[in-house]
Length: 266
Image 1 (cartoon, one colour):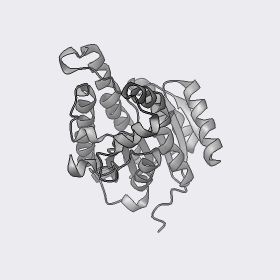
Image 2 (image 1 turned 90 degrees about the horizontal axis):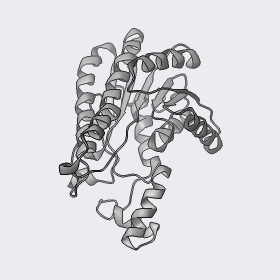
Image 3 (image 1 turned 60 degrees about the vertical axis):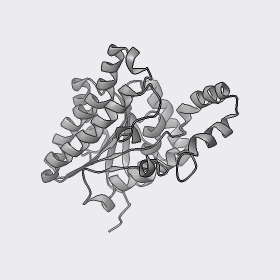
Image 4 (image 1 turned 30 degrees about the vertical axis):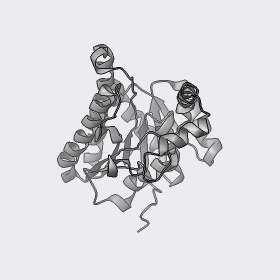
């Protein structure tokens, strides 16, 4: 058995148009899977597809959909089946966002939007792709969580994010319990803050506010980890390929932390 070979498998990466989702989609395609990426904006999907093609010489399909809308998720599943040959084997939930606000000032409408994007959408996709997996007697669901589902931040601003990632972790465990008898594994990835292309402008602003250059800022951000560096998208991709591959067929209900060791000391 080729433990890390995804040849012949088909994957859908929701939230695959940027950041970690795009990196994971590229990694799955490089491992041999046929991949479809999805997010709300078609323009972003086209750009991500071109970047993946340029970086790795692999092609991916795409389909625009809002994962918080159940009807659109149903349509996404059908479109993915059509484009990928009738069968999906792997679902990656990498969608969501973070809006930092102090707890005592948190805008509740924003909090509700975060719940919808960061957790309700995971349940919707798991429901409908899970039904498809049950029919096939096989499937892999990989949820993108965070170290913040396990440990809180020292400073303010992350009440919404931590709450939703904690919910992702427990949803992952419950889905693993319910779907295991159907041959479906459900696991999650909990990275630390990661230097994705989407974060560049944010890091630049934070570095400027701190009066240092970006390289110094990134180094400082990693000093609290045992490995003494900030994570990169590549650090997360390997974990995703493992959870998508036969190597993890007897693993379910777990949250894996490619976090530089933060959760070991946090």
